[in-house]
Image 1 (cartoon, rainbow over the protein chains, first blue to last red):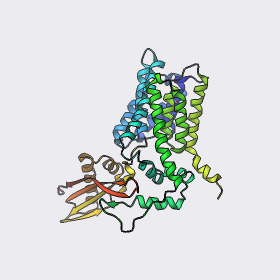
Image 2: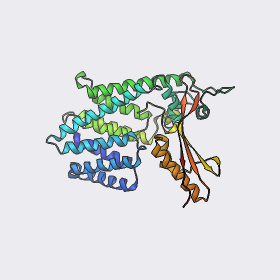
Image 3: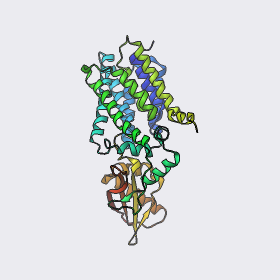
Amino acid sequence: MIRAIPTALRFTLLDFLLRPWGHWTIRVPILVLATLGILDRRALAAPALWLALAILTGIRIALDWPLPDNHAYLLGYWCLAVFLGLRSVEPAAIVARSARLLVGLVFALAVLWKVLSPEYFDGRFFRVTLLTDPRFEQTTRLVGGLSSEDLVYDREVLFAPLPEGAELADPRFLVEPTAFRVLAASATWGLFLLELAVALAFLVPKLGISRHWILIGFCILIYAVAPVAGFGWALLAMGLAQTDERDRGLRWAYVVAFLFVLAYGEISVAAIGLRLLPG
Amino acid sequence: MFASLDGGSFRSVRAFVEAEGRWEEIEPDPGLGKTLARAELVPSDRLTSRLARHIAREERELGLPVDAVRIQVWRIEFAPKSLAPTRRLLRERTVAVPPDP
C-alpha cells in the first residue's frame, strides 16, 4: 500500500538523489541524508532530517546566488514546510496544506510572470525559445516542421544581433513554417491556460476543480516536452502529500506520473517520434 | 517558468583592459565561470567590480600591465514580429586598478 505523506517525502528524497547539485561539501551531506531517509522509516519522519535538508539547500542557494534555478528554491521551501509540519500536532494536515499553498503559489507566480513579460503573449518567447533552446530541438523538428539545417540557419540569425537602431541592407529572414507558428502559439496559450488552471485549482479549492488530475496531467504533458525532471518530481511530491489516504487510485496515478517524468529524463519522446517518421 | 527571454542565453559580457593609455578588448577566461555568470545575470556594482578585479588579477599573473578594466553587459532583444535581434547595453562599469605594490 502506498501511503500519502511517506511516499511524498520519498519522492522528494529521490529528487535530491536523482538530480544532485551544488558543491561537493553540500552535495555529499544531502545525498547521505536522502539515502538515510529512503532506507529508514524513522529517519524519514525525523524533523531534523528535513531541517538539515532545508538548511543545506539554503546554503547552496546563498553560495551560488543568483545562479541556482527555481527548482532549488522550491525544494528548500518544501523541506522547511515538511520540517514545520512534522513538528506540529497534526503533521499530515499541516504538510498537506503547505504543499497545496506551495503548488498554488508556484503556478500563480508563473502566471503573473507571463502577464508581466512583454514578450510572452506576442509569441516571441516561444518562437525564440523553440528555435534556440537545445532541449526543444527535437520537438521543433517533429511538430514545427523545421529541418536541422533550418535550425542552424535560424540560430545564426538570432545570435547575430545588430547594434540598436542599425539595419542590414539585405536583411535575413527566419525560416518559420506555418506548423512552427502554430506550435509556438499553442505553446504560448496552452501553457498559460494550464498554469492558470493549476493555480486556481490549488489556491481556490471552492471552485471544485479536480486539482490532482490537473497537476498530474500538467506533469505528464509538459515534462514530455520540457525535460526539467527535478521540478516535476517536486511538484508531484507536493501533490501526493495532499491526497486522501482512502484514494488509492489517485496515489498510484502520482506514482505513475513520477515514473513518466523519470523516463522523460532518459528518453526524448520527440526524438522517438522523429525516428518513426518516414524519411 | 518559461516566460521571459531575458536570461543567460541572451546576455553576454565584454571585457576591456586599459594599459599604457590604450584600451583593448580581451576574451574573459572561461575559468572565471561563476564570477562571469553572476555579473551577466545581475550586473550590479558589486558583481561587475568583482569580475573586473578577477580579470585584472589574471592579467597581472600573465605579466601584463593593467590600469583599469571595463565590463559591459549586453542583452539581445528581439523585434516583436520579425524577431530581428538587436544588442542593447545593460550596464557598463569601469574599475581602476591600483598599481602593484
